Image 1 (cartoon, rainbow, N blue to C red):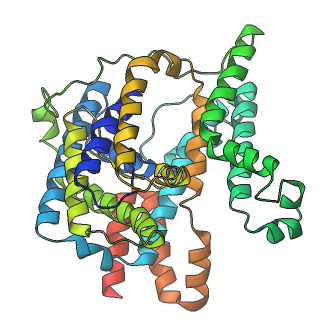
Image 2 (cartoon, rainbow, N blue to C red):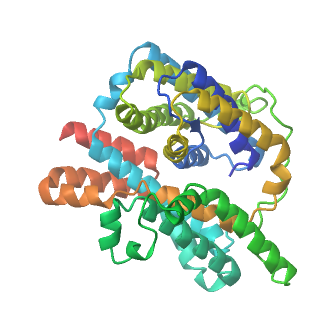
Image 3 (tube, one colour):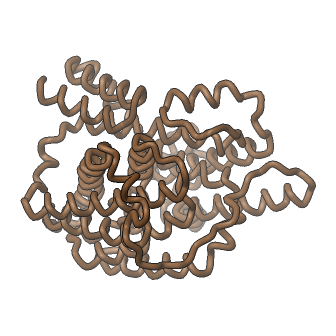
Length: 402
């Protein structure tokens, strides 16, 4: 429910601030699917409908998330990661992934209906409008999604021997030193950009052929990077909701856990130490920076950090470089972004959301730890019936009681 350019507002300053204060060298901060979901559901729970109110609410939320994170870091609450059950987090991420995938079906299939607040409302809206699918949009979106998923799973298919013995990947390049393999890997690394580029060309060709109905992002009105007071002009509406502080506390905790999850993985891989409390503070300052640029809550992103590593990043200087690229995009690429079909963006988001869905963890818990499985199932059901915030809280309480 926020304008497209708010995503860019949330990407520039946080990258620069984390580069100055963070300790995990490969982490790239910015908007993530989980943060978008949590923020969107928080704004819905506050009853914010108009775009101006939602922008103001999101920036104020980022400020509060930042303040809470800084305070928790100073109080050395970085060890909170040790008290959050892995299975509860797995169920939370699965619920988030399912919710995000469902929310993108609207743009993937070319459907139109009013904004919904709950997962089951989204499912109902899609199911009752299957006869209104815009076929050219659906073919383009689903085709791009298949290509993205094939490239993603091919890239992680394992060793040369494993690829040779696989009944599907054996038809693809297998020798990691060969030119075809390297070329396809480059395509896989740049798959999101290629999806937008190819999809935009196809949509343009369809319009030229007289096929209308493929919805574009549309006009993007932005004043560039300017500093503003978060929530300015709407304090009475925003502070009148009790959900503001609770949502900010949940987002701060989840954002920190997500950052530690991705950053800790690469810290272990590259054998260096990081300071969780310092990163809590750095993440908080990144959110404060996002707030004063009309952004929304940010955290360390799985996908962008993985891409950062793939291109050889070994220091936080890469975050500073990324921030300058975002700066350029803000001033030079917005007219191009306005012409991008929504159905090209949906597959990219769905691909990222699928990555956090962990069915295997449910199977393992069901076979070996029935009580843990019930906690996971409760977390999942409550997250889908209400919001992921309530689901996480229920999962945490049940995990402690168990």
